[in-house]
Image (cartoon, rainbow, N blue to C red; front, side, top):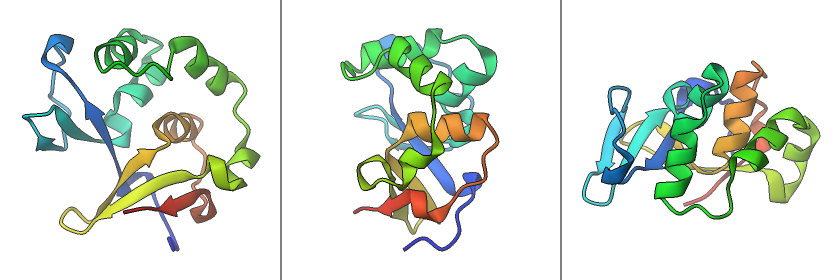
Length: 134
Protein backbone atom coordinates (compact mmCIF):
# COMPACT_ATOMS: atom_id res chain seq x y z
CA UNK A 1 0.00 0.00 0.00
CA UNK A 2 1.31 3.40 -0.95
CA UNK A 3 0.65 5.97 1.77
CA UNK A 4 2.05 9.04 0.04
CA UNK A 5 3.56 9.50 -3.39
CA UNK A 6 5.07 12.45 -5.19
CA UNK A 7 5.94 12.89 -8.84
CA UNK A 8 9.63 12.86 -7.89
CA UNK A 9 9.18 9.32 -6.53
CA UNK A 10 8.29 7.95 -9.97
CA UNK A 11 10.41 6.87 -12.92
CA UNK A 12 9.35 6.01 -16.46
CA UNK A 13 10.90 3.16 -18.43
CA UNK A 14 11.28 3.87 -22.13
CA UNK A 15 12.28 1.16 -24.55
CA UNK A 16 14.35 3.16 -27.01
CA UNK A 17 15.80 1.37 -30.01
CA UNK A 18 18.93 2.63 -31.81
CA UNK A 19 17.00 3.66 -34.94
CA UNK A 20 15.09 6.16 -32.78
CA UNK A 21 18.26 8.29 -32.70
CA UNK A 22 17.22 9.90 -29.41
CA UNK A 23 19.31 12.25 -27.28
CA UNK A 24 19.84 10.66 -23.86
CA UNK A 25 20.81 13.80 -21.95
CA UNK A 26 17.89 13.41 -19.52
CA UNK A 27 18.31 9.73 -18.64
CA UNK A 28 18.06 9.01 -14.91
CA UNK A 29 19.57 5.54 -15.20
CA UNK A 30 20.36 3.05 -17.93
CA UNK A 31 18.53 -0.09 -16.91
CA UNK A 32 19.62 -2.36 -19.74
CA UNK A 33 21.41 -0.87 -22.71
CA UNK A 34 21.51 -4.21 -24.50
CA UNK A 35 17.72 -4.23 -24.81
CA UNK A 36 17.24 -0.46 -24.84
CA UNK A 37 15.61 0.17 -21.44
CA UNK A 38 16.25 3.61 -19.99
CA UNK A 39 14.73 5.16 -16.88
CA UNK A 40 13.62 8.78 -16.84
CA UNK A 41 12.15 11.00 -14.17
CA UNK A 42 8.53 11.69 -15.06
CA UNK A 43 9.18 15.34 -15.96
CA UNK A 44 11.87 14.16 -18.41
CA UNK A 45 9.88 11.38 -20.06
CA UNK A 46 8.93 11.64 -23.71
CA UNK A 47 5.17 11.69 -23.01
CA UNK A 48 5.33 14.63 -20.60
CA UNK A 49 7.84 16.61 -22.66
CA UNK A 50 5.57 16.20 -25.69
CA UNK A 51 2.61 17.59 -23.75
CA UNK A 52 4.59 20.59 -22.51
CA UNK A 53 6.20 21.44 -25.84
CA UNK A 54 3.29 20.55 -28.11
CA UNK A 55 5.83 18.72 -30.29
CA UNK A 56 4.84 15.06 -30.47
CA UNK A 57 7.50 13.92 -32.94
CA UNK A 58 9.54 12.05 -30.28
CA UNK A 59 6.36 10.44 -28.94
CA UNK A 60 5.45 9.24 -32.43
CA UNK A 61 9.00 7.92 -32.96
CA UNK A 62 8.86 6.11 -29.61
CA UNK A 63 5.58 4.30 -30.27
CA UNK A 64 6.54 3.55 -33.88
CA UNK A 65 10.06 2.20 -33.33
CA UNK A 66 8.99 0.16 -30.30
CA UNK A 67 5.95 -1.17 -32.18
CA UNK A 68 3.40 -0.04 -29.58
CA UNK A 69 0.35 -0.75 -31.71
CA UNK A 70 -2.07 -0.03 -28.85
CA UNK A 71 -0.95 3.63 -28.79
CA UNK A 72 -1.35 6.48 -31.24
CA UNK A 73 -1.11 10.25 -31.17
CA UNK A 74 -4.87 10.53 -31.67
CA UNK A 75 -5.59 8.30 -28.66
CA UNK A 76 -3.10 10.24 -26.50
CA UNK A 77 -4.59 13.61 -27.46
CA UNK A 78 -8.15 12.37 -26.84
CA UNK A 79 -7.09 11.13 -23.40
CA UNK A 80 -5.48 14.51 -22.68
CA UNK A 81 -8.52 16.48 -23.80
CA UNK A 82 -11.09 14.26 -22.06
CA UNK A 83 -9.20 13.13 -18.96
CA UNK A 84 -11.44 12.36 -16.00
CA UNK A 85 -9.79 11.90 -12.59
CA UNK A 86 -12.62 9.67 -11.40
CA UNK A 87 -11.54 6.83 -13.69
CA UNK A 88 -8.41 6.41 -11.57
CA UNK A 89 -10.56 5.11 -8.73
CA UNK A 90 -11.65 2.15 -10.87
CA UNK A 91 -9.47 -0.92 -10.42
CA UNK A 92 -8.82 -1.42 -14.16
CA UNK A 93 -7.65 2.21 -14.53
CA UNK A 94 -5.30 2.42 -11.56
CA UNK A 95 -1.69 3.21 -12.34
CA UNK A 96 0.58 0.22 -11.80
CA UNK A 97 3.96 0.76 -10.18
CA UNK A 98 6.85 -1.44 -9.05
CA UNK A 99 9.12 -0.33 -6.24
CA UNK A 100 12.89 -0.46 -6.89
CA UNK A 101 14.59 -0.46 -3.46
CA UNK A 102 18.05 0.18 -4.93
CA UNK A 103 16.77 3.44 -6.44
CA UNK A 104 14.22 4.18 -3.71
CA UNK A 105 11.83 4.96 -6.57
CA UNK A 106 8.75 3.53 -8.23
CA UNK A 107 8.83 2.55 -11.90
CA UNK A 108 5.61 2.78 -13.91
CA UNK A 109 4.42 -0.56 -15.29
CA UNK A 110 1.20 0.83 -16.74
CA UNK A 111 0.01 4.43 -16.77
CA UNK A 112 2.69 6.65 -18.30
CA UNK A 113 0.14 8.53 -20.38
CA UNK A 114 -2.18 9.09 -17.40
CA UNK A 115 0.63 10.19 -15.08
CA UNK A 116 2.08 12.54 -17.70
CA UNK A 117 -1.33 14.15 -18.11
CA UNK A 118 -1.72 14.47 -14.32
CA UNK A 119 1.67 16.17 -14.03
CA UNK A 120 0.91 18.38 -17.04
CA UNK A 121 -2.32 19.50 -15.32
CA UNK A 122 -0.51 19.92 -11.96
CA UNK A 123 -2.84 17.50 -10.18
CA UNK A 124 -1.83 16.41 -6.68
CA UNK A 125 -1.40 12.64 -6.60
CA UNK A 126 -3.77 10.46 -4.60
CA UNK A 127 -2.24 7.19 -3.33
CA UNK A 128 -5.57 5.46 -4.05
CA UNK A 129 -4.90 5.81 -7.77
CA UNK A 130 -1.98 3.36 -7.62
CA UNK A 131 -1.45 -0.38 -7.36
CA UNK A 132 1.89 -1.96 -6.47
CA UNK A 133 2.95 -4.86 -8.67
CA UNK A 134 6.08 -6.99 -8.73
